[in-house]
Length: 278
Image (cartoon, rainbow, N blue to C red; front, side, top):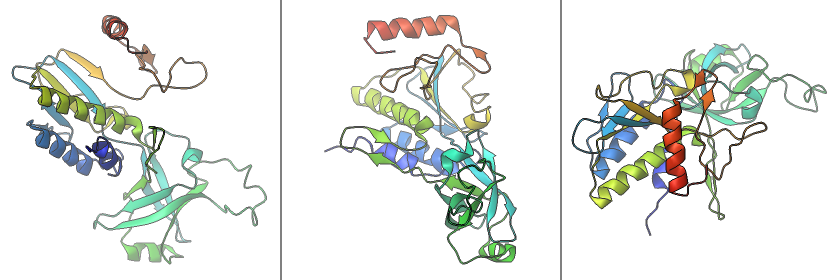
């Protein structure tokens, strides 16, 4: 039986916070090459790939980079303070297992914890505000001082990556961190493979950006002939919005402003014609 989720599983397993995406980009390049295409890297480290002959007019993009952290301070008690990569509420990662990647290619595991986290010792633990100034990374090594951390080779600027906790469930659901936006990348892999299987070619470019979480992933690097950009990303689900995990979201605007009305109208019409819930 074909392992249809292998690409998703393997991509999510690769740590790739913004600024640390080389391995994920290389994996993407390898997948597209194995399918039968000729992808290329941009100067910025993104990956782009044309799905047919001719000059592409449309680019379909998804992003490889994820949220994460970077070592900001080596503390005197042997713990680490981190700086945020991307934007997230720190409490959403409290207790999460992490991996610290050093410049010497060593990887250390640890956990992101609240300072003084034991309820036995700290009666205010439930009331303490969670911020990266009140939280630390505890390394899974015998360390109790800054010198101990230095001896491991850990330095400021090392990347701190959160464990995704990927699971494929009997119900057919998949739960994992960083489905935003590695699920989108997986969709593009599947699209490329299906077109190759059918022997179809289109002058369309796939673009895998690597700086989306810090706001400039799609700012450049496309083929010079591109006229339209369609981005695949997560759909917002929550109070006050109409998104659903079981439907496609056609985004009207984000915090920076509205998206192109004509393109949105075309996408909505196509969804209705193809009976795609949106």
